[in-house]
Each structure stands twice: as C-alpha cells, then as structure tokens.
Amino acid sequence: MTGPRRRLAVAGGTAVLLALSACGGSVGGGGDTAAADQEPLKIGFLAPITGPAAPEGIAMQQGFDLAIEDINADGGVFGQPVEVVFIDDQADPATATQAAQRMVQQEQVDYIFGTITDDTTIAAANVAAQAGVPMSQAIATALDFCSPHFWPFGETPTQLLTDLVPQMVEQFGPNVALVGNDYVFPRTYHEVARQLVEEAGGTVVAEEYSPLGTSDWQPVITKLADSDPDWILSAVVGGDAVSFVKQADQFGLLEGRGLTGVSVDQQFYPALGELLDGRTQTVRYGDQVQTEANAAFVEAYQEAYDTQAPISGVAGNAYVGMRFIAEAFERAGSKDADAVSEQMGRLEYEGLTGTVRFDATDHVIEAPMFLTTIDGGAYTVEEELGVVPDEQTKDCA
Image (cartoon, rainbow, N blue to C red):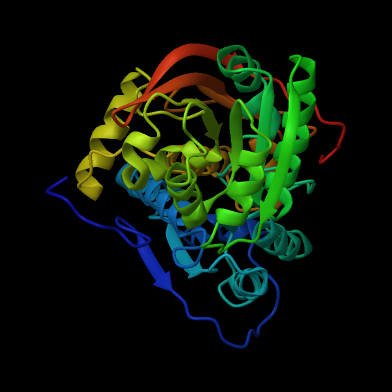
C-alpha cells in the first residue's frame, strides 16, 4: 500500500456506482455455470452510506472494500478480478427493493452483499430469493428469514447477550431499562435480553422505543430515569445512538449507571469517546484480538482509512464474510447458486479472530465471541467466550 486512501466500492477491481431508475431486463445472475471460466464474478453491494444507518453502512463498506482488494491481489476468483456493483439504499426498504431488483435483473450479479437494517435486508433478500441469487449480510441481526441461499454473517441477539447480561447484572444490579429504535432487530434483541435478565435474577423496569431518525430523546430519557434502573441496555443504532448517549449523559441518566448494548459498538467511539470508557461489550470482531491475520488487517485498515479509531465489528464481519464467499465460489468451481450454497454450508474458514463456519441447517454463523472492556478507544479482551450457541428451529436447507 502506498498511502492513506478513502475507497468507495471498490479499490483493486471494477466498481459500478448506480443511481436508481426504472428496472428492466430478465432475471438472472446465479445459474450460469458455463460462464464461470469466461465472466468475472460480480457482487452486488448494498449499503446505507447516507441516512440514519450511515455509520454502520460506511463501516461495512470499508471492511468489504478491503476484502475485495485482497481477493483481487491474490488473483481474484476464477482467475479474474471480482467486479462490484454498488447502490446506496439509504436505509429505506423501497429503495433496497429497487436496488436488489436492478442488481439481479439488469446487472445480473452473482451474489448480493448487504445491507444494515432488518427491513431493508428482508426487502433485498426477498428479491434475491425469488431470483435464485445468494445473499449475505454482516451486521448483528434478528432476522426471521430463511432461504437456501441466504447466509447471514451477523451476530444473533443470543450470541451477543448470553454472556453480557449476567455480567451486567452482577456488576451493576438487577434492574435494567431497555431502549431501542422501533424496528425488528431492537425488539427481538430485547426479547432475548428480557429472558436472560430474568434467568439472572433481574427485572426489566422500563422498555422504550423511538423511530429511526429521532433527534430529541429527552421524553424517552425521562421515562427511563423515572424507572431508576441500575443499568441500560441500548439497541439504539446509527446516528441515533450518538444522539441518545450524548443526551442521556446531558440529562443525568448515565450518572452512576451502567450502559451497554449495540450503542457502545466500535463505530460510535469516535463520536462518544469518554462516555464509552469503562463500559463492557461483547463482540465477535475486535481489533485488539491477537492473531497474525488480525494484526495484518488492522495495519491495512488503519493505513487505508488514515485512522487510529477502533475498527467496527461490522467492518470485520464484512471483510471475513466476503473472503468466505470468495472461497466458497472457488470451491464450487462455478457460479451456480446451489453449488455455491452447498460450499457455504460446508466451509470452515480461518477468519481474523478464529474459525468461522455456518450451521448448514439453520444458517446461523458460528465463530468465537469476546467479552471486552472499553478503555481509551481500545476494546480490550477480558474473556474469550468461544462459540456461543444459538440453536434455532428453522430449516433453511
């Protein structure tokens, strides 16, 4: 690498940036087995780099772009550079639907990677499933979506909370307030949390939600404060997470109380700084995890984006996820969706922080988790948790 640079899907390959317009053409992009030796692998990358979920979208894009650069530096897939078609979905389901339709119908992508919010992911995943195009996402998810070709790399609420909740009850006390944005993931995240709180002998004393894009959190903060919790579990996301935590501090909610949840994830540290220091968080990816592969990734990431800020978990997941997908295509030896998905369910890949694999039946990702303490931007590993099981009854195969 020759110096700091800011990528926009994608260095090292061919990038196509699309504005949305009327879609046309025939459905395709997953079943042309004979073309594998002639045509480059084409990935449709869908992410909100504007709108309320932009912090997560940009982080995902950064990890994804580094993966594409490294894949192409290693010879690409099928001996050719991977191509990327990128569309900003703005965290809007209608835009995500149109984007996915364009990707499969006009661009004839072989795989879709994205997006961030559950509603946009479901919108795109439905399009992909109908077209027979495999798809993955990379952020924590509570999606109740099942398809033979849908492979989510994001952590489930059970994986994130199983060890975190008992730790918080022990450290701060039994009374917890739940707060989040009003869509699928925060509500499912809190359903899991409520059960774990009760199992740990605690009590949920408040539960509040507000729409994505909320700027004034004072009414919610007042209700949370009135419940007098020992600690707060926040599923407030995107730019809202920054607004909520800053206002919670301003109005005294955080004084003497614990705070954890997705609002203390790495991508928010540059904006929140010392408000997150001393907090506890469970992560799958952390830049402080000591492996040779992770050290190389951290060095490349810091140089590429000219940053010393903590690297987001969604960036790490996106990097590992795209490398995993590329390996599955190579092992399949074709672009056929069935052949690729068969390899996705079989593959064990040595990621940045340990071995990554899927349960071939329910498509739940299995990878090591880590309990961390935040200190000066470092998410320091306090305990290696190993693979946290999340056995689900759905049969995606």
